[in-house]
Length: 308
Image 1 (cartoon, rainbow, N blue to C red):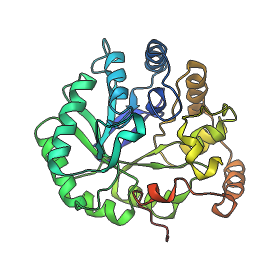
Image 2 (cartoon, rainbow, N blue to C red):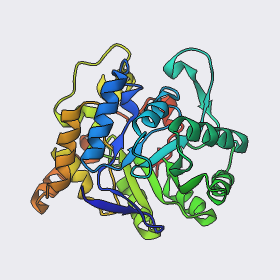
Image 3 (cartoon, rainbow, N blue to C red):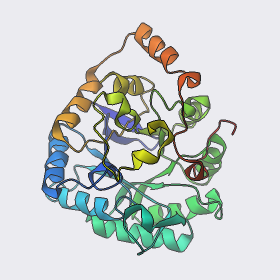
């Protein structure tokens, strides 16, 4: 597996990461734990050394799953996880999430709990999952920077933020990576964010690079509790296109089955011709895409450089 570098602090990871959310959360009932661990181990065999998770996936169960898979692989795999939601004990799954929370005390409690669930001494990349309107990003990054100085976190990241917010955050402490949805049918980062990342030497980590499965050509019949039912857009070359957009880009497509994982890995070796890239850009221009990425309520937690 080829390697790429995220950020000016030279965080080296496999050119393709693995998004782990769907193994425990959001896409119907979680898969068999042992099968998920086998998929994770196959990813390690294929050279993927960059896993993406979050405390909210489950909640909490995805980090615990990864912690189990990491046994015997200590120091060989880099972990990115996220904080920033207010998670309660009421209900199941999505029902437990009651808004955002990036207060300093919650950040500190979250990192300690994530370290314990993952079974690691340090988190390689720690993201604020969504902005908290009640806490300035400078204060959030200030708290995160303290975690770096304390040796609990190596690198800092932000998710779904605008270029202006990124610049403010980066002035407080170097930001290694920005994570946002980016695919052939989610082109918003091209408006300004990608260029800002390049200018500041910040890595870019696209999630859902296959359009939550829609662009893979293998979208299954959705389970009744699959969250894609609620997304407005749901009433091998696509991944290569994302990889071709810059050497500072490391996509994290999800895969819970080994054959899908192996297919994704083959995209690293695909080189699209310039004519093919231009054709895909034209076909998937913003005016040809129908529907928002999220519901109106969820979009309030997503920053964009595009006018609303």
